[in-house]
Amino acid sequence: EGGSCGVRCSRRVIDADMDAITVPYGVTVVGTACDVHYFLKQPGKGHCQPERTKTLFEEIRASVTNNSNEDRSFWRPVLPWGGVYTIKAGRKAMACTPLYVRITLKNTCSIDGFLMLLYVILSENENFRRELPSYLGKEFVERFLYLMDSCKFTTVKLLWIWDKMEKCQYKSEIHKASLEIDLFGNEHENFTRNLENLMSTIQETFCSNGRCPARSQEDQRKTIIICPSHDSLLGDVIQAAVDELFCPRTELCEELGCNGQREFTQRIFCHDAPPFVILNMEQWKSEELPYVPYNLAVAKQRYTLEGATLFSKEEHHYSAAFMIDGNWMHYDGLRTENLVFLNKPPELLLLSSLVYIRD
Image 1: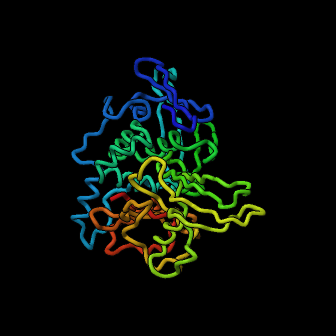
Image 2: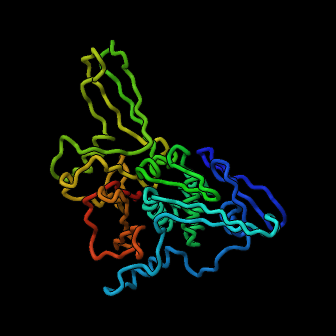
């Protein structure tokens, strides 16, 4: 299956029992049909499906409802940091000599938190599950949900890497029969910018000076980066910053030699209001955030807080917090018990992003 980045996984039949995946940089992984089923077949087909009475999300939701003060974490790790994908070659293909090929993932926290949030958003909202395929692709959404519910967490990450990321966004090295993929970097580079046109916006500007060298301009953006507003130091500073980016305004034209007034029109979404928005909060300091608003207006559309991603500079590590049925949970892939129930909203002192869902 191929993604938008041009990294493709091709299939060829070796014999009745064998399949092969060609992974980036020419490494060929050979394995049984069951091993590679999740990459090569549509969800719901084949013979490798686990039998589950509940989805993973339903299990997490039930745990939130039934948790006690003595047991504040989900019973199993979800999306643990890193990952190892090992495939054993069939006897027929390798002349009766078993061969193991390993794909090792490192520093996956740059996508883990957002993958967790994406799963919660899709699982909680049936309407969003129908809308998001138009942005991310129907096959991707179906496979993503299927793999998460099957607890195939390493495969989920590989799906994102090969379907959504570009080669230049991660490092990969070959060590004998092992492929190592390192995702060390910024989560907005590795995840947010790869959400296709989900949050694409456009704003037109027009200068009052007829001699302005760039009288008419268009500003198009694929992500939403907001900065502290100069006009609002108190109150709802996040709403003020969003308004500064989206609302009409007039400023002095900054073109060289121009003294005109530049009018900015209302910034609008290119493809209607998306099911969710991610606000890049990397420009903010904790002292600039007296509180985080539960409700937010973005381009005249109402949104509600769903979660956040957090960044620790000391560890260079990302984690995430999100709500299920009004209850907060904290996710940290480095922990053994990495999904923890919170008695109160988390302290969002090290914000990397805020995630809001459409009302």
